[in-house]
Image (cartoon, rainbow, N blue to C red; front, side, top):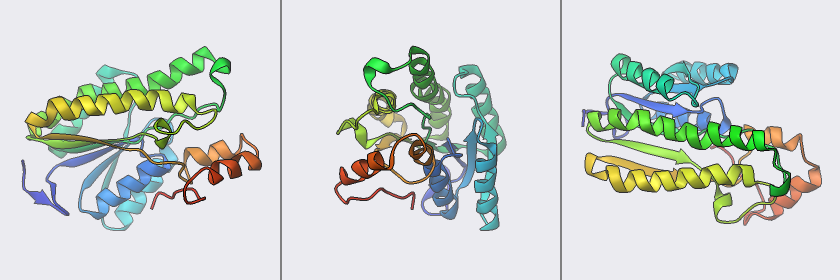
Length: 228
C-alpha cells in the first residue's frame, strides 16, 4: 500500500457515507483528526454535512463534500471513480447510513416504507460495496466498516425496520471479510446501541417520554451512548 499519513493511515482518502448523521459526523471528525483526508457524503442533509466539513477545516483537517444517491448504482460507481481520480487511493470506507423509520409492529408496516428502507439502507450498502471493492483492490488493500445495530442481538420493540436491513449488511460484511482478505481488504461492523443525536433525536419526537425511559432502562448502563 501507499506510504503512511497520520495515525497509520495510508495516503489517499477516507469516504464516510452518511456523514450528515450524528455517528457519521463523529467518524469523520476522528478520521480527520488522525490525519486523513475525508470525503463526507450526504443525500439531503447538506447543511449538517457542510457544518461538519467546516468544523474539520477549522481544526486544520481536510474535508470535501459529495452528494450521493445510494439507490443509483451507476451514479455511485461514477462518483467513486471520479473521487479516486481526484483524491488518490480509496483506503477507507465507513458506511454510517441510517434510515428515518417508523416505529411500528411488523403487522402494521407500510409496504412502501419497507421497500424504501431496504432500498436506501441494504441496497444502498450493496451499491457502495459494488463500486468500492474494485477501487480498494487497486489500492492494494483497504478497510471497510459498516455501522449496524445492537438490536440484532436483542430485538428492541417496534424496531424491525431498523434491524432487518442491518442484518443483511452484517451478512455482506462477513462475506467481504472472507472473500476480499486475499486482496488486503478488511471488513468489520460496529453495532452500537441507542446513541443520542442524529436519528434518535427525531425518534424522540414520535414517542412518549415513558417509552424513551423504558428504552433507557433496558440498557446495561441505564443510559444512552454518545458519538464521542
